[in-house]
Length: 84
Image (cartoon, rainbow, N blue to C red; front, side):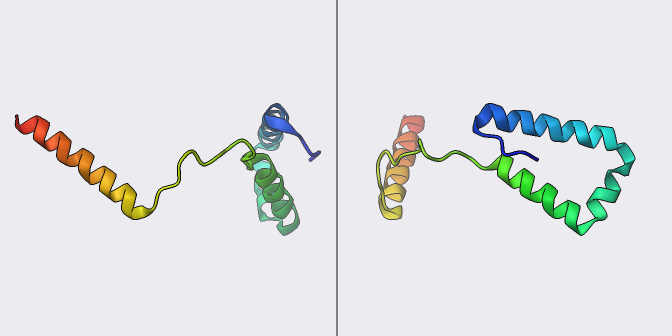
């Protein structure tokens, strides 16, 4: 399978793979039972399914303790509001 770049290219690759699977029909079991073919199929799927994480950034860092205290204070505020 050629290397597809970007989300559009990966979508094309998934559609192409789906077409091959539909074309093979019940004969897909031959591919699945072949070690070489299954490895190549798995590698192609892993390549297509990789996420582009280059634009993901940490907005605010918090420790687990800080996060728990924020969640607890929000929970306590909600309980007080519902009891009023």
